[in-house]
Image (cartoon, rainbow, N blue to C red; front, top):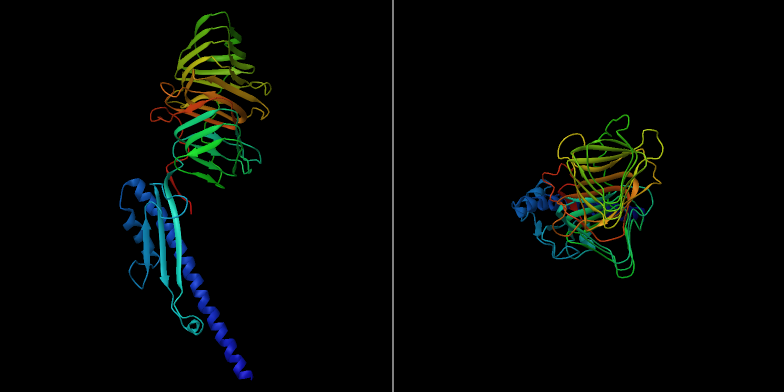
Length: 400
């Protein structure tokens, strides 16, 4: 009896070992499929042979197509899953029948172990909207009839919250792709449309302008600067203390350079006009209190371009990172607000509506702690010579 029992125990132990080898084979195949899919998607973006690339990578894992009954199938686009219509997506399926030893006592046929992976190329490139807050909050909000077009560019949201992006009413966002650390909440007839995928649960993106130092300054060239009643003026760079205000149809032309707003409010209202090329506005405080904020009202005409070279290259607006998180900034100029460069408010909330759909700014980035869209907005990313930092990069994402 003991001898018979021991024989059975040894047999089951051997069977367990055999099944274990199948799991090891499965894990190896999954690693091979993941790597092959990513390499093949990169090949698609590079315009090279994705099929041979995928099978070459699988072979490095000991899985050679057509050898030892191994099959490496490569599909572009995938034949199943959520990316069957994405021309940049590649599906890799690897399978191989496993040997039977003791398991032949229980199975009539060899088990076929397989793995599948899908990768999409060209993800994450040309970012134009970034919400930096990594705490459990709603980073981006859009309500009403607002339509936001991210033309050939992507949105990044760092909050891990399930409603990191919240859309209600008839709100619409049209984008190349969206990357959300948490998830998104849509109510009513709101709609998030992405041509290259919406990805949730991803790692937060780093602040693209974190390495740019705040320009140093001292003294005041102007104090309580204000124009009203249609006044016309050309201004030089310098330090503007306790506010910068245009109202009543005033018109200002800015010479190139850095304009320091030391405390108070940068305010454009009443259909006033602000024009400048090679200009950076820095919002700060020399006292550590009353940090400058921005308020651009609807109907204001703003045509600004950031410097393309130098210490503030690519930055049209740059708020001090020490500004308190309670501050709120507004760029609500609408279609007559066209800013080439980055609007960078790393520690405050920005309410935004601006940019014409055609004939406006070629390159606009919005990077802030929190973002609220309260009117139609258009972002373009023809940024080759704009001096801005690259956001994201042409990465390849493993999506299935």
